Length: 307
Image (cartoon, rainbow, N blue to C red):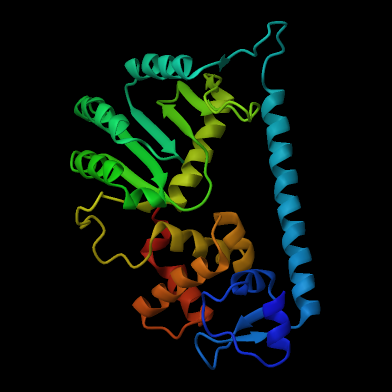
């Protein structure tokens, strides 16, 4: 809080990279100075406290909603005296997980959707490329989500460039997301969150209720991610002003969520969210912060129906 104390004594914070600035903005203790772009003003600490309480209550409400949904979901699972529930198989090693994935891929007829929140080696990408091209040649829809850092790595970039040129869709997502492989509506392999000491264990899911739930989780991650062609020029949506990220932000704002709450929902900082909105304001020719005009445009824009 040393920066806050200095600002209370009259110091100015005009550099967005000032240590501690992002935390103060996130807590609502300082706000943008609309009369001096790039500068900040002290906010009412009581209002900031109330804002954070409301935000945390919203988070708790969301957790309670998720727990209720999970309770209803697991209530549909058949009661079994067997060690493993029907439609769920524990995979105790990396080899078992790879074997389950290979077997399920052999039965694929419609799509293969994957999410990889980790760095993939050059060797892994070289082995993956011919297999993925084979799926595309078979007519399967291929979607993959990587971390935003993948854009700086040549292995993933070369792979993305080649598969997207053949019809695959690749996106990158900033922040934490869930590792998974979805194959048609018949199988999914997901990370094992019950074993924090061994990252190579996993679960194979074939239960239709859980598969539908995982499909929704993946769809949410996909909507928040940004398209990536591995360096190829993207002319597929010429004239589109919004990105998947800005569309998620605008939908949150339309639902009455605060920007701080939306940033938390999307797993990004308040500064990152502000940067996305600022770019959109510039593209539209609006004054930064003119949420009324932005909301009016979004309400009638055909881009509101995009993923």
